[in-house]
Amino acid sequence: MNLFTQKEQIKGIIESLLFVAEKPLSIKILHTILNIHESYLKEIIYELAEEYKRRNSGIMIIKIEDSYQMVTNPQYADWIKIFKQQTNNKLSEQALETLAIIAYKQPITKAEIEKIRGVNSDYAIKTLMEKKLIKIVGKKEVPGRPFVYGTTKEFLKLFGLSSLNELPGIIDFKEVNAA
Image 1 (cartoon, rainbow, N blue to C red):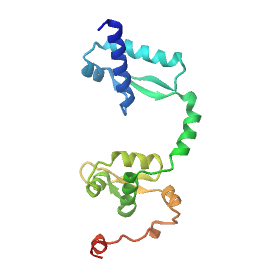
Image 2: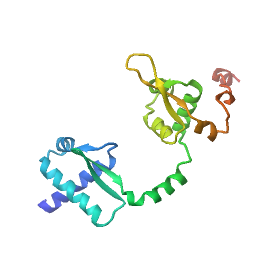
Image 3: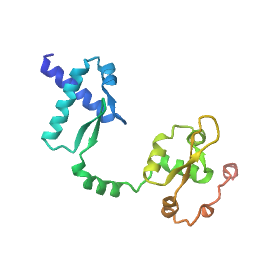
Image 4: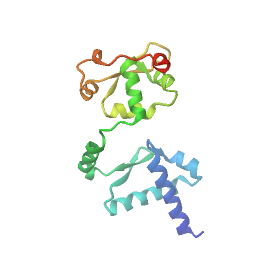
């Protein structure tokens, strides 16, 4: 493999890692993953960032201290808002399930939600927080003081409720299964 091809491959790998990373990636982490000298990594990231700038791309790479993150270009923020408004109205089955648990059991911790659901609920909680359907309402008075979640006025508005007292009752599933 010649040097040009190798450099392009490394560039593609870095681009992929930055794309899937949920938070900024440090040079140290990239060095650990790729085993490439930090100065060379910085050079490649700089080249990638410049390529995006040159073509006025919808994405860009920003530097945050000694880390890098791929973000959308603020120049296209209005289009992103339109897109989010049109696609942001639907909730996944997982998010609806999590929302129902929070609505009926609030205030409730993430660990309590996950115990009921039996699966990790990070993404569902994040989605519900972004949609402003739930919020952090405090911290539980136990070791570690985890956040407790509750529903918001947006939740009531979305479901046409004036208060949580209007939520339908919880059916005992044993009775349903027996019938």
